[in-house]
Image (cartoon, rainbow, N blue to C red; front, side, top):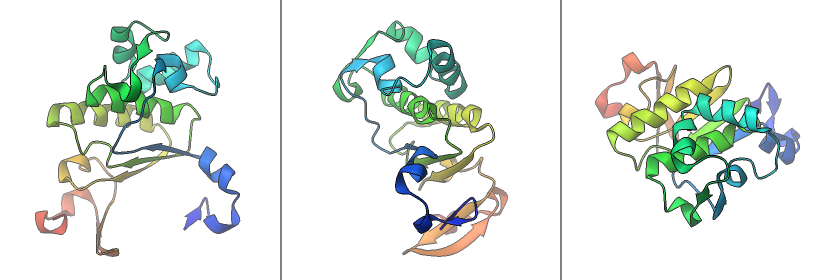
Length: 169
């Protein structure tokens, strides 16, 4: 695997982690303020964090909660699945990573909420590479390229318009 043309094995793991934002299938939020969940290292000022929230589509969630000091319950129990994912997307963007990985980030969402998260991803894309891992075809329709794996092997590498339903089952 190459990262900017350099073998990943030759790069310091900490340096790699700083260059990747990750949103998984199971969004994790902890008991604490919105601000502490989004920026635990206190990297961003309020204006910058608000800009990230707007770009990711999560600003409305934070407004509804009552702002940066509003409380998030353990594991985000006081939020919907889509709200949790939008906040996790915003958190992944705090370091402004050049690579954003979405690992089944919309798999447990209904179609409407998934579209809301996809819109947030599209708005946050801005100049970064996005690796979207998904099983559902509707989750990847906006991709530039779709790589289909079966049993650990690449069986297709196509544009979204070239995808056949049997390629993704």
